[in-house]
Structure formats: C-alpha cells, structure tokens
Length: 95
Image 1 (tube, rainbow, N blue to C red):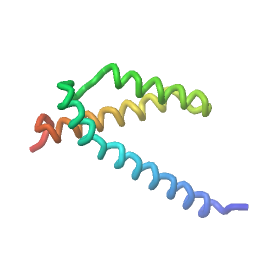
Image 2: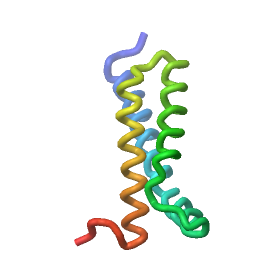
Image 3: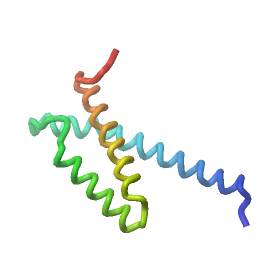
C-alpha cells in the first residue's frame, strides 16, 4: 500500500512530464511559423485550432475526462503557441 508521500511523489513526476511536454509543444512554434511563412499563412489559423480542439475533445471523451476542462487546457496551449509564433515573428508584446 502506498503512502500519501509516495503518491504525491508520483504525481510530482507526472506534473514534471506534463510541463516538459508543454515546453516541447511550445518549442514547435518556430517550425510551425516557418511552415506558415512558406505557405503565406496567417499565424492564427482558426480552422486548425478547431481541429486541435476537436481531437482533444474526442480523446477526452474516449478516456472519460472532463471535456470542458480539456477544452480549456487546449485553448491555453493553442494561445501559448500563437503567442510564441507572434514573438518569433516580431509581432508579440515584447518590452
């Protein structure tokens, strides 16, 4: 039987993995921006945002997770990526 300390350590490890995956996802902004520039696309692509959200909702539904919460999380991830692309292109809110 696990102690609360052991369970919390396991959760801490999972949290660390989540943060590393978010970092990896945001780091993809440079590649996405480069591809968008080559195809003369705007940074914000509402149709792709919808695809990402729908895919996240489908997966959340399959895993019996709170769909509203997952939509919020992925909305934040999309916004982070858009903001990073804007920073990289010089359009961001840099000081």
